[in-house]
Image (tube, rainbow, N blue to C red; front, side, top):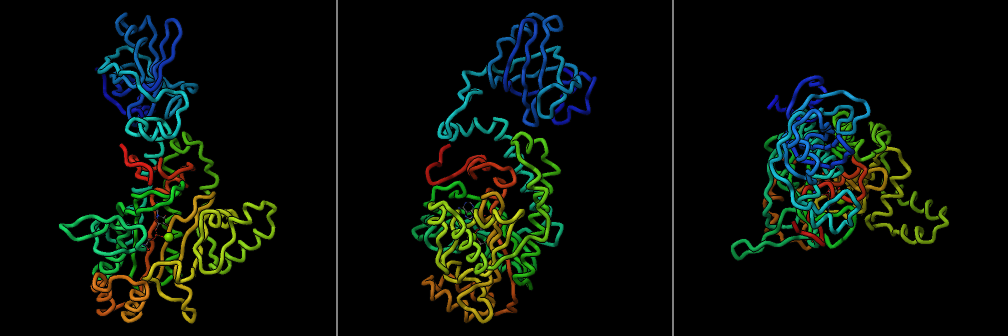
Length: 445
Ligand code: 4AD
Ligand code: MG
């Protein structure tokens, strides 16, 4: 067998005899020709089996190969602009073929399948082109997240999954029995990072977080990944500057490194090219005015109804979608009412009913991709807020303690990985951005 290569490197092997190890994605043919679309995990190439060039056994095997059969195929790489594939423009002129396993009837055929069927077959569905492209983009987003933070002085720290108290509201807790005591799956690593900044200055955690979300929407998972940077000596204004640099780097990295995958997903990349700092910043109050103006202007009674919102309440998807439509890049909304946000946010100077919070809303209806704030740095105020919210004081003793030994203004945010990937990739539902998503309705496979 000739030199084994990966399909993604095929351009470097034109004219050479190579071997590819993979699976049959699709097969077509006519007469003396069989066209095998072969995938190896790094791409798809068309392997052309021409009867006079191979043994009768090889031709017979190629002609009867079933979808997803595993195989090792050798031949000469040819450049041909018309050849389909990922990357397109190359094909393999087959000389030899070995079938490792002739696959049984593969349930996901090139015809259309319903989403429920596909979700139940997620273990196989991830082999399909679009899912493959999405999960490669996810990996690149994860890499870009770490690259940017690591090269800007942030230390990656790990925060616990089993936690004694709620970080983000008590309504979405998953309870676990911890030797007879109730503990909860982490909703956030933030509170622990408010401790680690005092050791390292700038930190982040990046891992799975859990929310028992009862909402069945295209933006909610019960297990999702979040990256949470936390920064000492940082106020709300500085936080927004960090966020826009960070998000821009992620988007531009995907544009540069995942062109083929974005093409597979038919993503309109011009929308992504516009993602450059500065991002517009509007206050919650201004956002409400804009929503009122949209309501006044619309002739759609349903939208009018959906957009109704009293001061003090958090936005839902329709509000975020309509607001984001007014801008060509992500938009910051800052200064939310204290009562609709978590207990730890610093009050707005002179306006205690407002807090120093900021959400970043993605364009094109993808909604909130980051949530962040300046944190309360005064121990007495923090204790007061914990009591007001009826949270268990004892569980937060260590957290209040942090405000007693060199407390400083500090800020941080959390970026939801799946929402970010869904937006960049331009796909409808966040569930497809995870290899094995967990939602209200599904924990299988
Ligand atoms: O706004 P959230 O709840 O903020 C926090 O958890 C803070 N502790 C972060 C911080 O300041 N360190 O969540 C942050 C982001 C959201 O903007 C959203 O992108 C994502 O996490 N997110 C979800 N993604 C998918 N499914 C869910 N159920 C999500 N809940 C939040
Ligand atoms: Mg939020």
